[in-house]
Length: 163
Image (cartoon, rainbow, N blue to C red; front, side, top):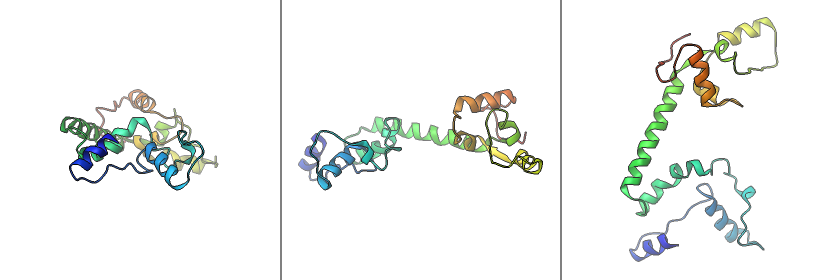
């Protein structure tokens, strides 16, 4: 409200958070379009984007919008730019680190239904990136780093390689 009062005072359009950008957008949209008997209670189950509306990525979702509206300082925007660059560099590194499924499968379960030997040989010769492995259930960055260290490939020092 305060940001929008300031924006209105200088003739700028209001700062509106949409449903896909934050829970406040869900709350306001639900109040306006659906009404409610409990206006101070938000049902997060109504937020179709709830998996991406997390507090750990709020800065990635909203800081640029706040900067464009004039409510975020340039220093904060520069810090966000540095964070985004670090995230992009880390993801690129994870994409470059590629190892055979046989290496990953010592720690990660690859269940595909068929257990015949031809299928197993085909799986073991397949290459997967560290990024792909991180998308699997029960796998986190610590586990990927442990696997790579055990294979004598440190995540920070590896450029991929074949083995």
